[in-house]
Length: 421
Ligand code: EPZ
Image (tube, rainbow, N blue to C red; front, side, top):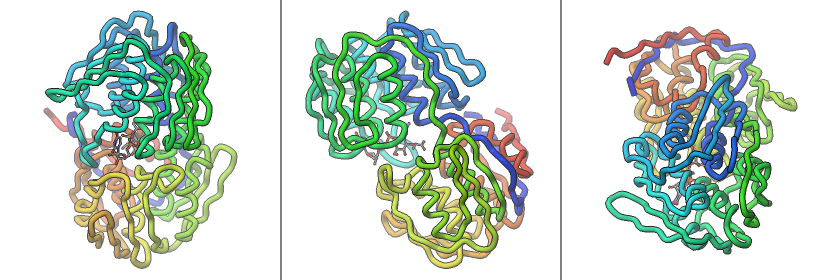
């Protein structure tokens, strides 16, 4: 990470059209699933993000061939020969834990270093491990490593204590080549899980029920290469909608599935924004002050935790007092201190943040502590009265493709200052 910074001019009314990229949180499990194929997987609409670069690096270290051009990622896993990846790479991006399931199914063993926690939480893996054990996997955990071995994977009933996205994905990717049928109950219902089911079924798997709490997987003998287009990034889309409201602008977000952001649309309307969805785009225009409201983050189809920091930035300038309750991650209020530096009036009471709306935010020196906190501060800087310097924007590069170009096209004035090493 080189920790570059943005110098952002405030009070920019944004208007125009912006096209979201493919979903980071769909592409990551889809890339992991390519490990399962005897043949080439072609993923279209893959966003060029640091997290995606790291994930393809993981597959290359395992011996897969990868090629990335014009947002198309070609993965050939026929030459896969390794079964472990080094600690340094694991720590760079915790979603590399998604190789557990497919590696176990593909070659019966894998050793990963326990992915580090991150700014927003400890990110435990007990549900991943519980589910894989129920499929017959032996797991050794020591010295910060997780080693998983399975002579034979057997389908089974798996109940998740928490509808964990990653655990659901890992178990699905292990179960597709198990002997017999697996039923996952209390499964996560995120759209990215449905996208993974669609890719697996194109590869010859038999998965049903993704998007509901019960997913049934009938094991098959082998999976073949195929091609698949990644769903649009609902969190990027939601971020752009909030940009329109915060800057009193008028933005049409293209390449979005409105259903995937229905909780965000509902809350924007509740606060007084005009939201006009179409089949694959959503337009938002807003005048005047947004009204305060309360939010509780929940697993899909509840309000997404990945939109919590961005929505808090909007509520910081809303009329009235709002309460945000973060029920998913135990430490996802890192952006509060930085927003306070911009004049926001926010107090934290355990899992809840109480936001007293102020008329305007002030320009300031702030820093991104994690991906979505960085996005929240980016939006705040665009709406603030004066200019802002936002440090550590490399966090934002993890989840937003071509952010500068997209926002300059909407009228934003910003410069990226590359920090000399
Ligand atoms: C995915 O993370 C996303 N990442 C996250 O997006 C997102 O915030 C999260 O789902 C929730 O929607 C990717 O898809 C790559 P979880 P994941 O397992 O799978 C607890 C972003 O900004 N838990 O659903 O790691 C966990 O601590 C990122 O793009 C256990 O207790 O999330 C958390 O409190 C941030 N045990 C809750 O469940 C486990 O074994 C939800 O975690 C697993 C999770």
